[in-house]
Length: 71
Image (cartoon, rainbow, N blue to C red; front, side, top):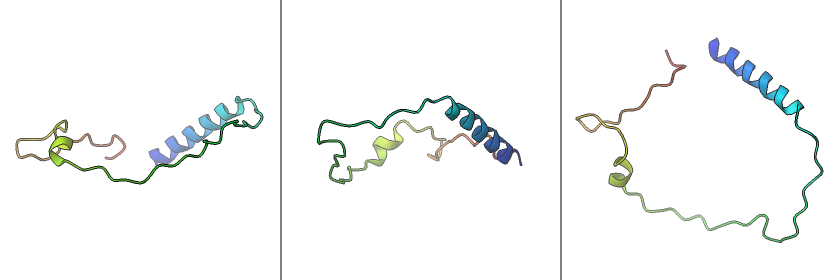
């Protein structure tokens, strides 16, 4: 399939790129706030605000671009 061939090419190109990256020593951090976390809080969702920038047809249906790899 074309998708598999494209994926293989991407992986080969990525592997070649990784070969050019030099080996570096481990990074050490002086400060204690390296792995900070925040509270998991859901924001209020406003559908009107979300849909304000969406492209829609005359019936209000979303218009989206079809993926190029789908026939």
